[in-house]
Amino acid sequence: MADEMMEPGGGGVTKKFLYVNRKAPYGTIYALESLEVVLIGAAFEQDVSMIFADDGIYQLKKGQDTTASDMKNFSPTYRALEMYDVEKLYVEKESMDARGLTPDDLVVPVEVKTAAELGDLMENQDVILSF
Image (cartoon, rainbow, N blue to C red; front, top):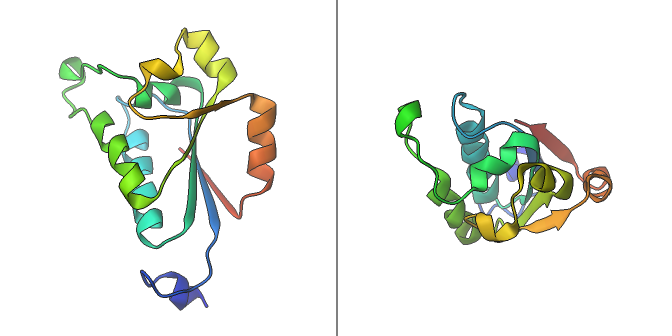
């Protein structure tokens, strides 16, 4: 069965993968690595969800200026998630409030949930990966 899961379109077992993003988009490789892993999971037709909390919310912020970090701005790549059927994007309300951000400040549509609601969401996942 594991082999079936690894074949795109193989009709294998679908698992629920949740990716939790807590790190700022630049300064480390975590955010970019998370995005790459999400796209790979989606290509293998897994049920993919993403949570953005703490400084991870900045990964989705519009108008990122990366010149000081000497890294490429990869935030527009989040718009490609929809093409991979990755549409379950959640942002922690408390983290948004603490940073003075609203869903209008983000490059993609998200669903805002409280930390408690996100905890309930986590309970229903097969695999949780934190970046």
